[in-house]
Length: 160
Image (cartoon, rainbow, N blue to C red; front, side, top):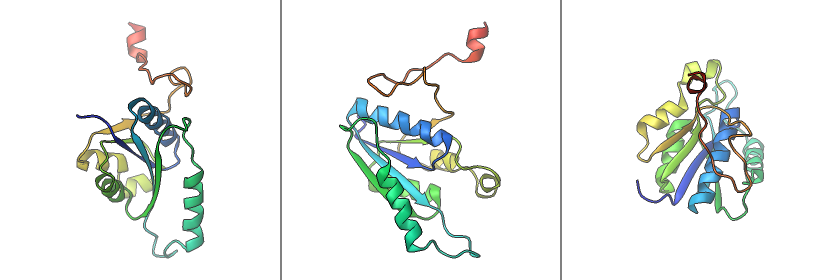
């Protein structure tokens, strides 16, 4: 793997996604990479019809308000409509991403059972490395101001 110049962070506003955002931001800061924040609006359910323009405008406004903790990080925000895994992979190609950083679990529930795991689909089909953030980081594992992401020991390792 060469130098990381572009990191793609697909947002879904879950707890795991928020943790992935902190990791993606820290990696972008530490490597001097551009951070592409992608929000995908899933295809509409036929009963409800396509998302109206005001909904998409609101989604874009929320996306534009998402700030990284370091103002020196170059940030690009994109809003796509479509099947999340497909659009994430398309964005990775369009932005020439060197790394995708995403949460392991999204909005979940019955929707995950019906649609399958977005993270798994991206992991299997991406042409660049994918970093899956499994669970939210404890405050002691991650500090936004100047600290680096550090790996903690698993609970099994501590019990030995």
